[in-house]
Length: 338
Length: 171
Image (cartoon, rainbow over the protein chains, first blue to last red):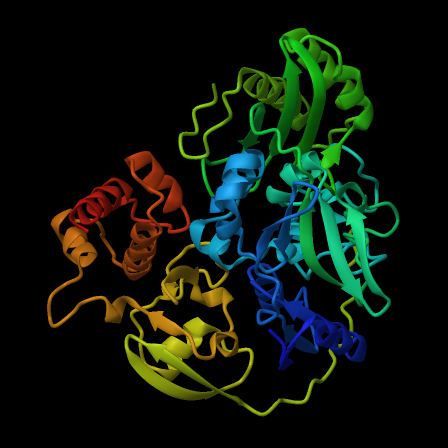
């Protein structure tokens, strides 16, 4: 870790002012990813601006019947919040599928969105990485790429976004509220994270001078028919090979609304709106789910070590949609997949 | 496969800041410290307060050996900057026994032979104290899931789960 200056922000306007005055500074909240990256010297900020004293710790109901979650709410508090557990169980489940109890106690809601990929080449400063050092090349293309992307990747970067929480937020169509020097704005969740394209160094569309203040959930939480199914190398405390957040609204046997988001397969939580639209009006059964999986994965591309993920994703999608349709969501304590 | 070595950006020289004054109440004792901002809570405990019961394992939040309770919540002290915990109340393994009597978790770990080398044990016990306070784990399955942030390379897991169950029943 290199030496750095440290300051505290007293309010959101002060935080925005401080980041504008120190372009090489970083905000710090939970620190679970940033401090680790600083120890590896992947991140070398000149200053840390401590935002943990900002008043962004509340969970409030909105006039539209949704929830507004302060950016500093710890992941564990959010997962166990009664309104989240009751009305947005797919979000609670996704959060509890990620990290460890200690890390969830530390990590903030806003920070979860901004965590960086766990691609081992991104972490290894001795190897080329376009995300860490733009223009240096992608070591994963010809290296060990078992954990890497099968959708939406290019030759510049095949890293995946590591979050579980974000996969559920994508399925729920959350909004991200941010503040910057020009005031406040909100970003649809689908537009928050980016595909790598030619600029894999940019993970999100958040401005360098902006700060996340809250996440807003719409009223519809799909509490009846949902699941978060995470497939990984060990049963707990591991990043996803493939994960699926599935949420359905069914009328009798007919799908009225379908949401399907995948983690571990792309540079951002992956949704395909055409696939979701094609499920509406069709029976909530295996044939529909298999067609949806085939269509979603039509352009999937495997590399030397991760081609298995295409079939794994296909099966995980069908299983997750089946769990959602049956109202039998995946337990995050008992890992038996039913 | 020729791979060119990544160009490393020239290191900026950042002037060393003045040390920052902070106060921590650790195991009931308030301490005033003057620390550089990059001092982790783990290093503050071990190197500045001589509380070496909290262990440094991976130093990356992956093993749980550094687990302590901050304001009653279990966290990884290796990924926490001490300056960010100014004013906090911290409990480490050294603070669990009361008046010479072992904490129920310490006794249970002995009763169930829940360790071999012992390096992970202080983190396991602090984590288990956090787990019991959270009140979310009831079954052995749930204990295993919510203790997954603590690695035991000796593989004493069945005995660790049994020890935690015993302490949970008696708490």
